[in-house]
Amino acid sequence: MSNYDTPGSLDGAIDDAVRDMMQVDPRPGLRQRVAGSIGARRQRTDGFRLGLAWAASLAVVAIVSVLLFRSPEPSQPVHPPQVAVAPPAVPASPQAGPQAVEARRTAPPRVTPRRDPAPESIFGPRADRVAAASVAPSVTATPAPADADAIVDLPSFPGALPQITPIGVAPIHVTPIAITPLSVSALSHRR
Amino acid sequence: VTGSLEVSDLDLVRLAQAGDAEAFGELVERNRRAVFRAALAAVGSPTEAEDVAQEAFVTAWRKLDGFRGESQFRTWLLSITWRKAIDRRKTISRWLKLAAASSRDEAGDDMFDIIERVPATGRSHDEVMASNELHRDVRKLIGTLPRKLRDALLLAGTGEHTYDEIGQLLGAPVGTVKWRVAEARRVLKRKLTAMGYANE
Image (cartoon, rainbow over all chains, first blue to last red):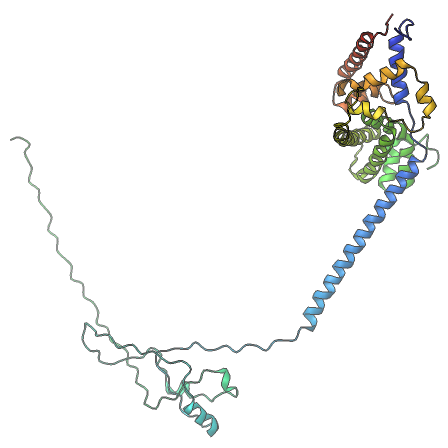
């Protein structure tokens, strides 16, 4: 039945088996294999870092190139706000040539002011009408710039400019209200 | 590194941390057996254990800057080795369970037992065949032990690790490790007795 029946045989057999399983040495050259793995890993890491540095350098060069060699864009003209209340009269300037004056007079308006019917005032007709954007003729009498397309051409207004008259506002008089105190007679709860 | 016997592990670690690959090579040389056998106790195959040992050394080199000398370098290195070995064992176990699912034989279905049936590297076919029947049965039964008992028994049987080191690897007190070793032997003897071997 048993082929291993000496005294204490099982303890000895367990010790032998464990020793046989575990007391094994690694193959020679483990140190060299570890050194090779570390060197290969280091090379991979160095290669990765080198590639990363190259990529970063190329990106920097590309960005600098774009910034340096980008052609300067012409500045966009800033259009003045177009007021659609009333077309201001632009009289012919003596400095501008006759052609510019003629073109200014014959050019169609780009912004057509929309004139709504004046509402009926509940206070009756006003003494004077005041245009909010009315300007003095001296301000508008500026010479036309060389680039006629860069500005809003407005037709000349043949009529005379209305005179701005300040509106007089009458002060409001507040009449104090006299409040008489209430007198409450005592109520009786008895009926 | 000259006079390596006089240089402590910690001195070699400091040199290696400064970039001295030769000093780290000396650390590999000093600890290669303990690392390999710890891995062998976990994975059961010398070939796998060599791979694990190599990975553990490379990982130790990579993480060497994080070693501050609060514990012994050998303990720190063995901890890395054990974690890698356990990871490898899980991978092997999953693979073997898939492979053995269709061809499970009478020898049992434990991963360690399946590994042990593969002839170990360095052992000739004649040596394997010359092993007696009890020896084979003991090895087979070791493969069927619960992992906690088997790990403690095999680590204690390496001849390279103290009970303190084994306790740190297994995360158990020394008393628990000793109990596991004794319990593993009791289980083995009980099973061998049940198989008909006499324990006189």
